[in-house]
Image (cartoon, rainbow, N blue to C red; front, side, top):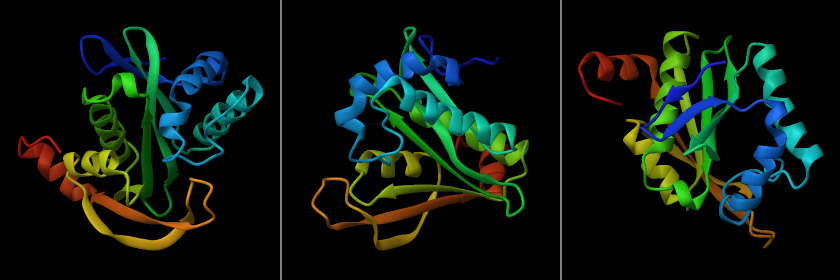
Length: 191
């Protein structure tokens, strides 16, 4: 399959079901760090659930949807980016990410998401690319800003808080439109 260089020591490539053991080992390192920010169905706890997560995204690819892509740093899976959804009929997709602490602060997610957005806009004809994040996730909000996205608004108390408190959390929606993405690229500005 493909491999895209993100830096001299980091690459982006498909995260396929046959990589379930590697994915689970990565999640074991990242679990506590990412659990507050990602859905509970994503954070697999055993090999079968890791395979299930990766199969879900492989099935989405085979039916015309997006997929899940791993970020490897020095040969070790440290995170990834994905299409949470990709709807060709509406021209709208949502991208997302996760990363273990050892790989933070290197710009890997921003570079990888740029590749996904560019592919979605140029190859799949997406009109709108969305980024949903908990309002308290400052690192995620900063990625959206670096990508040139605009904050569309806040969906107040739209998701259960992931801290076990039984409360609800606000979700911010950010987006970039195809013409904004292409205009920035053509103007020599890196979105």
